[in-house]
Length: 264
Image (cartoon, rainbow, N blue to C red):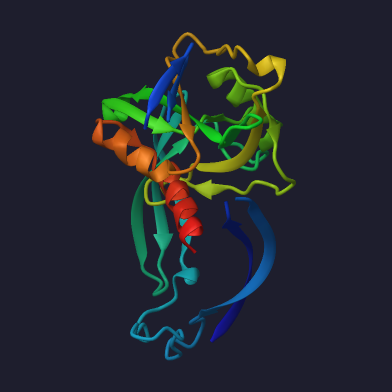
C-alpha cells in the first residue's frame, strides 16, 4: 500500500425579486481558510490491499495513478481551440485512445487558462449581493447564468485578470479579498484540459467609482449584469433555471456549498 500526502485547503462558510438599475438587473458568514494534510491510501504495487472504505470492495482494481499519456496528436486547430487524440497507458499497461479539446491559447506561465470572479457587493446598512452575468453561448444555443470570467493574458496574475474582467463585464471596480493564491481547477476533465481559477473580490458600493458602473465590452460581447442576493443564492439559480437559462455548473456547486455551510 502506498500512502500519498496531499495538501488540501479547507474552506468553510458561516455566514427573486428582480429590479433594474441601469444596465444591471437586480434579483432580489465569513470565509475561514487554512491548510491541512490528509492521507490518501492507494494500491501501488500491491493491489490486494484495500482502501479502508466500508462497503466498497476495490481489491480487484489497479490504481489509476499508474496511468499516463504517452502520445498526443493534434487533429484540427483554430485560433482558439485544438482537437486532439491522446494515446494513454492504463494501469494494466494497455494502450487506449481518448479524444479531447484544448485551448490553442494555453500557456505554461499562468496559474490557469481563465478566471472566474466571485464578487460580493457591499453597501453600508444593506445585505450583501453578488454579481452574475447572463450571456448567449452558441454551443448551448441559449443563455447562461455565470460568474464574471475571462481568459488570462500572458504574464498576468489571476488577481489582476479578475479585477480587469470584473470591470470590463460589469463596470464595477473591486479589490481582491484575502491572500489565498488561486489554484487551477479543471472545468470538464473528461473533455478538456481547460482550467479556471476562482478569485474572491469585494466591491464597495459606497465608493464614487461604483455609483454608476459602465461596462467596457468588446464588439462581440453582449452581457447582462445580474445583481443577486448572496443569501438564498441556490434558490435564485433554481428560479433562473426554471425560466429557461443554463446555470454554470461551478456556480451552482458554489451556491450549494454555501447553503450546506449555512445548514451545518
